[in-house]
Length: 254
Image 1: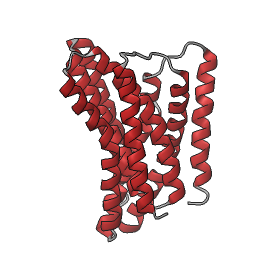
Image 2 (image 1 turned 180 degrees about the vertical axis):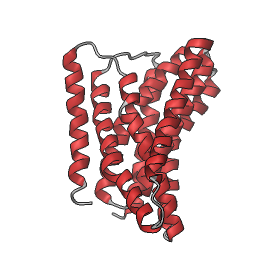
Image 3 (image 1 turned 30 degrees about the horizontal axis):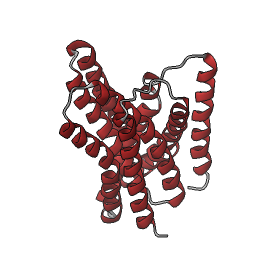
């Protein structure tokens, strides 16, 4: 199986997963509030995202910047990583502002979908731009787990809104198609940008995406999960640690 075919198949599976998981509770008017299986899967995905950022994406970006910009001593990769982190933090704070200040459920739906679309596009581009089967496979598993959790969250928001069916369908299709689109964009960039300038672009994207992964695996994960008991905290931490250790082990062979 070629890497291109694998990424195409991954994009199709991610699209179908997002579509099914968001439509099922929406159709039945279910508002899931505390699904342990999804929360544990999301904790595992957060560990993989955290490990991908710390052990793969950010070090790769630093290495490329050092090799191509030999006279530059400014920490560009770290700066772009911080920008990626702050962009998602700003968008989620903006979403929370509209939630609490405006009390407009339709506007909240649009803001929430915007944040999810940015998440999904970046996740897809990271998978698409990755040149290794092993790393791409683990990131694919993390995206599937994370997508299930985000899809349920989207279903809750859409259930609460007063949007008509046409708008709901458009939002669902946008959300579901963003990761496959990101995979296509990332794969295209990986094959078309082989010169130093292309490598700098890829390094810049990896550093920025590392910041978004750091945010999704820390503040985003903490803010979007309810825990009934302290034991649940430890179990989620264990799943996050497993995901992190998988990426740490993979770095030995990358």
